[in-house]
Length: 526
Image 1 (spheres, rainbow, N blue to C red):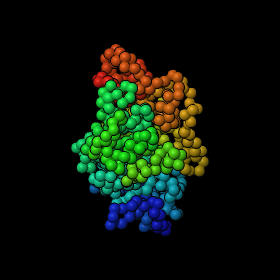
Image 2 (image 1 turned 90 degrees about the vertical axis):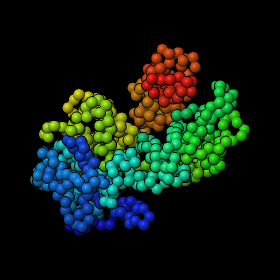
Image 3 (image 1 turned 30 degrees about the horizontal axis):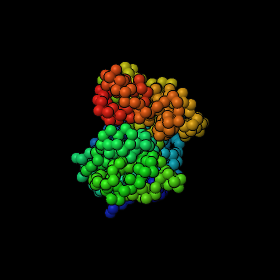
Image 4 (image 1 turned 135 degrees about the vertical axis):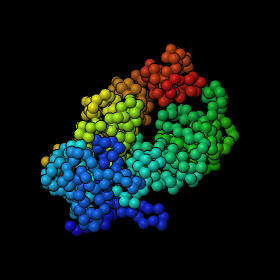
């Protein structure tokens, strides 16, 4: 077989200054295994670049966790000793020969003869099922990677996540603003916290503010503070988030939702370090590092007159793009097991991840694992975490995980890349908020226990659209609309239980918690 051709710069990961640019190679990552701790271990198929084949069986070769020197073979007693052979394909593709065992499947279809996966398919990730028990993800990897799988608090070893970690390390100690761009639920706040934790400000406050969750008329006062009497309801001097973050880091999530007057004030802070409280005539200085995040196309908003170009230029002193989960499918298996382990430990059932019987059916069935790997995850990591929780709690006390009807509908079946496989399922379209009946919105919020992000993910809309629908509707209200008397009475009758208050008042849990703090009322479940 001829050697693999050179991989284009689109498949190369920029190296640090003075270092050669690493070239990506095909790799196999364990995405599912009866023994959970094996998930995330990897085998580089570097030999393919030299025209040589790589054989994978039960007993060879070793899979290693990135950053570690010791590894182990697949070991599962049901995986065949007869090897699955990987060899170079045309134009950077990978040829897979299942051999006589016929234990390999792709999206539920048995691989009965050698099959070649294109370079594009390998780049997107191909899940290979072995003996109905182990799932290997065929993908591209950086052979120079040495980061631990959970470095900087981020789970995964994909090329995209490596790039994020590298950028965080490069800018963390510099006092410049950072703009984090990525889809909803992709982990932008986690990156902001990593920037803070590795900065000289790490021992100072980290204050996180979601601008999309603050009523527009209160945004300026919430951010910059207000003097007593500056507006109706300002019964005392109010400290803003800027003052609370003095000396540390202020994380502004959904910065694209900032009202125009707030944009002007933010620009002044970035240019002069000065803040005007609402109702004040004299500014005061603050020492704050701003880290902003958005999933919006700010450039388009500038063209539409909804965002100020100078503010974007100031915020983007350094930019980090967070890849969506569908662009790093090799991280889905490790992430799912990371979340599942946390839930199982809470339930006292972590033993399910380390079976005593080597021949027992896997706790995570292969078909379900492949469904997880093939889903596009519009809600990204947050959605995956919620699905893991749903599966674990729904499978409490059971030997294996099972999907309920809701998840069966949510996780679209994986389309086969083999001839005769099922037709690809159409991706779930993003819905127009105006097309969602208010009754459906109310029912979804109740089902999601007033977690607005979870409800937005389920409805296929942006979270801020829920606030806009509430403002225009008649069945729902915001926490800001609740009167002091009603809040105080409900707090007393519920014994300060925030969850009970949310169920009774039917408002956002986060916003209600903030209102209670403003009124000096303590909650027992915050």
